[in-house]
Image 1: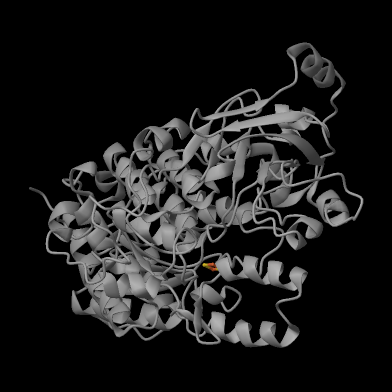
Image 2: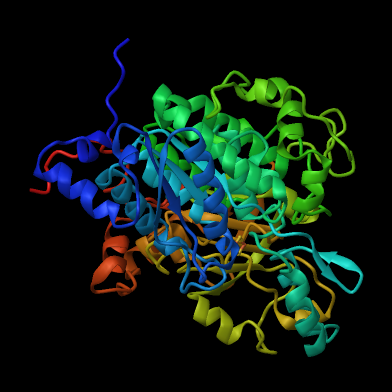
Length: 572
Ligand code: FES
């Protein structure tokens, strides 16, 4: 078989003026001749940023990737891309996921890269980089940055994100002082890495591994464990081989690999955010994935891990117990074990020898922590195109509930009124939040799990049904209906809900219904006026004009699909 010409040689292999230009300026960094003579050029796409604390260690970790690339005969070139720091950026990183994916896509295509390693960590840095890479489709691997060590506070363990919700409650009830807050701050984040719960970052790293895009076991290793460096180095070595094998993303990412990700997400109690990210990735690589697939494929899957927010332990414990490899082995025939992964072996081969060292952290399939753990997809007149709820994070007694709506038109409206003493609300009400969808906010922030009213928290109320067109942090819990589509800002039925309407949630029957008759709904629809656009210019305007609804993955319509790796025109 004829050896495929390296892309990078179109830049570095020329004997003409442009060959000189491409090589000469690179040489100012001190590269010797042989770097340009047919070595696979491996891009290290780094989401390192001091503004993304979860990815703050990736600059150093990239050095280990480079070592591996060099050892295998490749030429590593690291480049920065837009980094999305969940805890810092406003109004929400989700507004910028698609923008970051464009940066990744164009950076890969425009440069002399034969393969690319995506250095990821914080929530959106995994999907955005994979989405961008899919639209180019050269050999690609993910090096997940890994979770922080367990959080520690007053002799106990605290999980990133999940503990935040407890702080809020504790402050309202007076059981959490200012001194407690300061002590918890450093104890909660005492090492490099991303959130240490099975929140969105851990979920997305897990997803990358299940999709076959990491070396086996990579996603569970804590950020500061020496084995993370080993994994990075081995990833660099393997990437060079992948280029020689022309193992592109489209050979790995097929419909069955996405089905595996849905199944595994149910088994690990993963984040609802996986849904929109997985659909967006599928859209880029040309795989048809529907919202309903998440319910159809995930609903009978048992919960096999006991990790916060659904359970008790943290990612560090999970790694010591055997990590994702054990879960994937335990799932057995529930997965397509023959799916190809980046190391050239199948998922089943990679996990065949996995051993569990703590069954309180990872259960056997016959004795799961919970049955039917998958995310439920709801339909009904309140969410014509669907909505989601995470049963493993919800209260059993509220899974079938009819209550009176207390409506907040925007997040600002919610903040202004939720703690007013005379707000007409009790624990049986349904809190309705509008204006939190992709176009409406804009950016679909993680506000769906709004706090309960202070007066009900003081009464000891722990959970209420909350519904919105927004998202929820993967570290959060509660009976929270999310991703309602169409969103209120485009005139979905959610926009028509008024205070006092009755709303029925029935998770078993997968129904979310506004109990208002059709004639009245039509009257309200006729009178409805769209909210004013939230931006007149710039990227945000492009986003609002082009973002798809949540049930489709909230990608920009102009970004769905790919353009391949070919660059049609030259720069001279
Ligand atoms: Fe970065 Fe949670 S804030 S992973």
